[in-house]
Image (cartoon, rainbow over all chains, first blue to last red; front, top):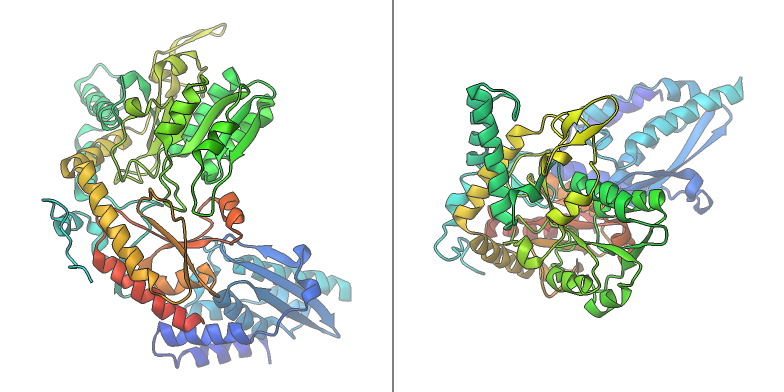
Length: 140
Length: 414
């Protein structure tokens, strides 16, 4: 599925939630079920420091696709990471570098990717795109 | 449960709440429960009106014009200085320096006093519960002068031990810089005793009073503080304005902090002479409205009475602790015997960021994180806490909402 198709799928899923509680219960569930990052990558090199919560991100090129794994010490941050990984993991480096992640806005989570939130998520998205750019060059 | 409309003494605090227009707002569709006053307090209509009045009727630069409007603006501005001097019982208005806030006040002393008095090997003694604002300026001064920073350790209850403090004072100690009330824990430090012990060795003391002045009567002469610093915006006044109180004997000896207009007497390209106190430390056009807003805030607090405010907040603090303490897995940080208006806590197995995010969805504004006290959080081995901080306009209902919100969020997260 393309970056856009997955985003549309998520937007459609979120449209069924009646209120913020259902939405956050879902995000918390996603956070709890996010596959745990390999412990060897949970180090300083893979750490994205936020003021409020911390994020670890690891990327790997498998064939033409980039596989991301990630973790956070905060469960809501982890849930949003799960969504970002669902959209970007398994995509080509080029599609990752060029991705317009409009779904975050559409499902009402923009506040979590604002620079003032400092939970590491905005830096994480930037880092994912940098991986996309860098891995494009590896390929070519 | 207590009667939800506690009335301390003769003051009707429900009516006081109505003076704060912002508290009528809704947040995420819920009535706002504002429990982050330690970060910045809300402002009563009286302060907002004073600011509006200044810009509508008095706006002109101060200490400059011969014209009447400038004179009126100067009078209103200097009236703010008199109010600030009265508020903390300063010996003279010459000892009241207008600054941008507590951080700038501390930076001023660290830079100016440090340049004059810190020698290589001299020690600056702080406590382990300082805000970054009362750590970093001293580290900068240490780098520049060769002085070294010493830290009085914090106990498990979030206090310092006075005999440990006393033992750390030495012939090398050039200055003590300590927080009056901890922003992260609410601990009220025994600053009067600390100052007495330091003065017994002729060591001057700076007190960071940012979290004290909104909540209790402060008398800098009774404390005998050499420097006392605070911000207007944490005590119902406007942002970007604060006070550095300093004893005249120190301020006279200290070199200027910044150069510019206002702080000079005469300027030639060969030699500049400096203005007298307090203007020597006030380069450039000051925040005129800040002084006027601060006076309105002081008048407001004095009308209610600092003792009444303190008693009211103590009741609220106790009420809040009672409501929260029954919650499964809650841990409080800061169990000092003397404590003011801050409840810092964690829920077992819950990240403070997650708890704060869900409370926000319920319209409850608390602070989460390290509260600009990373060394203190490291001492407790935690990434941060959830902090509910109180002001005179809070109610028992606010604390009921907080307790209910924490339970609800805890159920979602665990």
